[in-house]
Amino acid sequence: MEIIDPHVHIWDPRKTPREVTPVVKVFGRWPTFAEKLLRKATPQPLADFVGDPQYVMSAHMPETFHADTGGHTIAGYVHIEAGWKQRGTMGPVGETRWLEMLADPPLAIVANADLCDAAALEAQLDAHAMSSGRLRGIRDIVASHPSESVHTWCSPDDRLATDEFRTGLATLGERQLSFDLWCYSNQLNDVARVAGDVSFTRIVLDHMGTPVGLAQNPGLVDDWYEGLAAVAENPNVSLKLSGLLMPILGFGFHQRDTAPSRQELVDAMAPHIAKGIELFGVDRCMFASNFPVDKVSASYSALYDAYISIADGLGLGAEANQKLFAGTASTFYRLGA
Image (cartoon, rainbow, N blue to C red; front, side, top):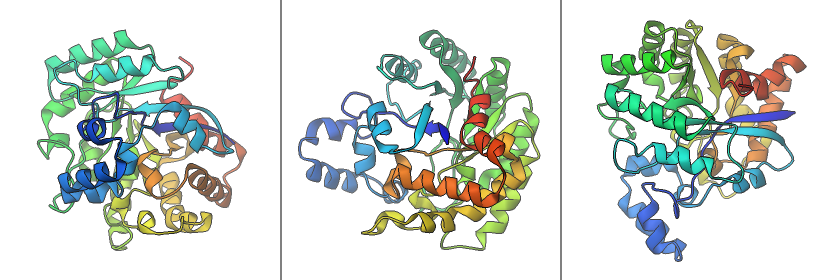
């Protein structure tokens, strides 16, 4: 199975500006101490989200990614903005320039820009485009949760529902850029409304809408699926079948001494992936790794072995599987352009 992985984060905290960079630069030669320091300095909701800080402290470069993929045939990957923290309006553009200097750059880049600041957005998009011909889209995180025990990633917390956000989203569509939308499942009805209001902008919903605490709260499934169904009614929205192993979902794989088996991963993910494909169809669905964030729970080989087992179990056929593992991602991100 040829794979195009449409959700990979490339970073190196020693060389790029990230939240953990100061700690890694100063104390990186003492990793155990650096990890303890980071745990103490990190708010508990964010620590719970990450699960294990070693995966955000360690470099995840193209060579790291390819070493992780094992026996799977990776035709390429799409880099999704990874929390670049350079100051100034043009700060996010530094990540795009850095990626272009890599010996093994991504097939496409989804950069960061501020959708709620019209003037800054135009300048940032111009600079991103001038820095790389690989620019295909933007991600501006809107994940917000009402519980204080769950980390909210945006400010204000109603960012997704603002008129400024809709205006920025429309600007992306006018420039033929897509939008990677990452939210929590409690926001899916807002996503559906926004997608309908700005129907000419292509959107991909990252990580199936991230249902917080899914493993401990089976009753959440009905509301989550209802939200996904509302989003799926908008033909401009695609779906990433990914992120289901993030600690925030509650499966607890990151806390175990032994790695989960393929069957355990299949059992955890299969019903939800099947529902996503049912709602969106294979032409709007794509498997993705969310590495190295999901690496805390399972290896890349184990994850994609599980995906292949799930796809085979659904019996959709070779053509549909090709779309799920590569074709839909290639079309959505215009990888032939």
